[in-house]
Amino acid sequence: MRFGKILAGIGIGAILLGAVQASAQAPAAATGVVGTWVNPRGSVKVQTGACGDKLCGWVVWANDEAQRDARDSGVQKLIGTELLQDYHPTGNGKWQGRVYVPDMGQTYYSKIEQQGPNSLKISGCILGGWICKSQVWQRG
Image (cartoon, rainbow, N blue to C red; front, side, top):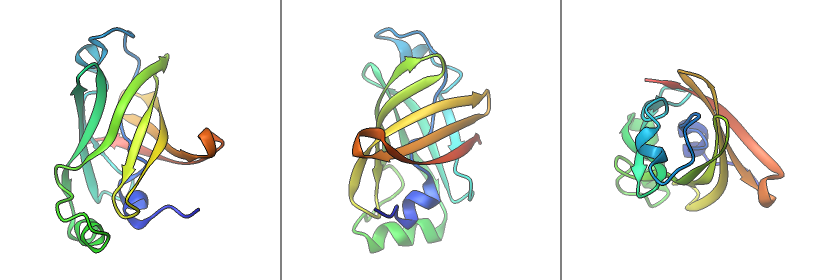
């Protein structure tokens, strides 16, 4: 299975997150992972924050090419789209949830691993997490 242009452009979404306490208020306490993250190509920025008791991320900026690719795939408004969905902590600096890939119209299992205070390794996976594609996003 190929990953779409938007996925390559915006990363595997999900984007995000670091070590926080695993509690109902974990996203609010996750000041180290809450913020704006930029994909490796610099074509998309995602803002992470709480969504209920989980952590999510929404597109807050995208260049013209990323927006055009999204429109070509049926997503009329890329900015505001929730790419990172329902992430919960699974260990020290590790999260899992789902990533929405606009140009494929699909949602995939996703893992995030904080690599440092300003970088996240975000993976989108198929086959229950056996095959993954990863990118490192930077705080922006």
